[in-house]
Image (cartoon, rainbow, N blue to C red; front, side, top):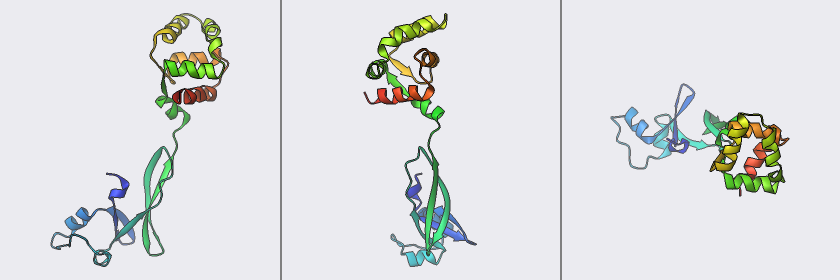
Length: 167
């Protein structure tokens, strides 16, 4: 159920909980509510329209507490962005995109030299990935090995994947 499917709140002893019209009807089985229930009728049952604060552009959004403001009830939201580690787990690009990003940033000519710096047995594994993989995962072991070999840091590699995702 999405947050906006809770158009009402029920207030009991000053505590408000989000609810739907179906829940209100279940709580009051002996009441025949009209198809469109006026706010005044709902208020008789301590039920009020629930306004929703804007949900800012966070990666993860959760409902916060319901607050009363100037006689209206408002659903609040809390949120957070993904951590760099969480973002990296979602970063997957095609090898074409990866090569174009490396070319655009001037790293493509350095790849063979960077591969040569990686010790065996990892070197052969990375070489196979570079030559034959169809996609590249940001959290892959071979990308982690390429970061120092290319003289990059974690953020610079994130930037390369972000760029690659646009190509």
